[in-house]
Length: 385
Image (cartoon, rainbow, N blue to C red; front, side, top):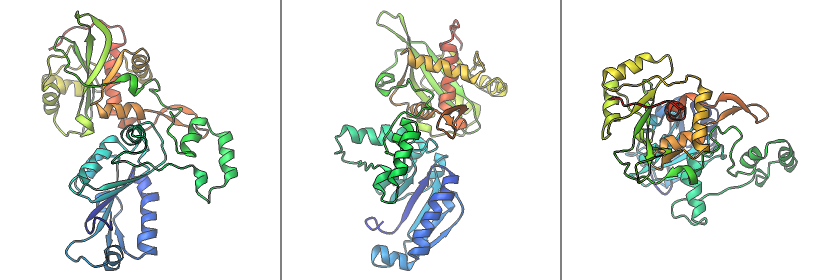
């Protein structure tokens, strides 16, 4: 803030709950009660802000800017659209490694800072192998720690002088190794609850190429009033035109989790745009006949998936990755983020349960599951128009 001067700034937490119990109290404790630099107002969303007073401006900038207020907006990242109405000069992202901090929100923050080329500070434990690893940590690691735009500062809990060494050693003995590495040593490790643990970016993520028009195409759809999502798969063929058995996700809708509020007709028009005919399209649960009817009336026949059991559908996606029959274009960032953060809830001992963590937010995974329920189930395909 001292470098950028007066204007708007952002503090973003993964969820409203974390924002209310961690971010805001700490921010108020330091800037309002201790430094007396201003006042915090609001309870959530972009209406929550800390407005710097004259004393705060003098402390930061050495003078008072009466024509340009300096304010920090505090918001949460579960809904990327909530971040789209601000233009900021810098941002602090707290616990951005959590699965609830979606890739779409990470991109939204960067867009809000683009005009001022604002800096971002991320303070987090590495909870998952999602976008934080692929978009921030991995590029820094590949640069040998000399990346022009990214710096990573990692440390163990014992580097905090207040953290008891005896407790560190006790947790080493009692926690699962992956959990200890992530929670206490600050190192990325695959969590025990990862559902698609066979997914490997080196094996399953491809550089985009022009999909030949002769390759059969399929669509998986997850319906929603706001979060309608689709994934598009092409059946790979060799040079002789013989199917290889591998399916490649070459497109997602909407791109990069920029959710589109539209009628069924509007969604269908966007989904069909630039596409040749689909061989089959699958979408929705058994109770979503109305959605399928609406899409049909708009010109796109969508079938009920051949199986309704979520776990069976997940097992078919797992089989696709495990056997090498499923791959994803690098540009399908929303789906990749979903796949890497799709996980089981953990019990008090850190062991996975049957429940899926934050299941309602993984729309691309649901769309992929609906398509794979057919593609890896042995049914005979037929053309639809």
